[in-house]
Amino acid sequence: QVQLVESGGGLVQPGGSLRLSCAASRSIFSINAMGWYRQAPGKQRELVAAITRGGSTNYGDSVKRRFTISRDNAKNTVYLQMNSLNPEDTAVYYCNARGPGRVPAYDYWGQGTQVTVSS
Image (cartoon, rainbow, N blue to C red; front, side, top):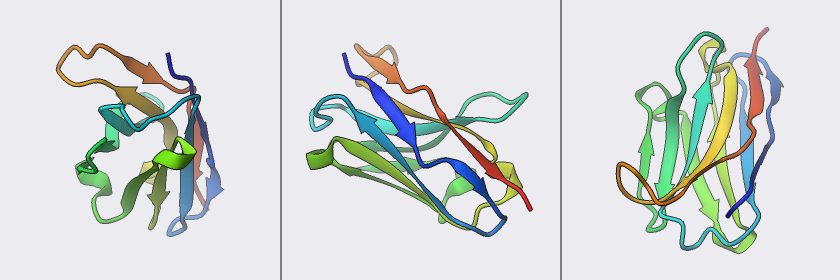
């Protein structure tokens, strides 16, 4: 019951930065976890970063110390600040909102935004 719309993707040179935004159609304050996943061509979708309603964060190993996830509950928006981008970061980035547990009561996805890192 929440629509997620990603934005901020685009073409960036290696070493550059981008900030992705995920706008939710309603309050995200009570959502257990908001996250960013990515899927590169021919690859499996993988966790990039997640943040819980309490503010705890989790990052994929490949993006630690380079990416930062944050949320602005007042704006119903979650962000992903991406620094020191490299070509391996090229993927479609998806926003996710999910409940707790292995089989959550809710698990919503945005349509994705393309990030391309290339010279």
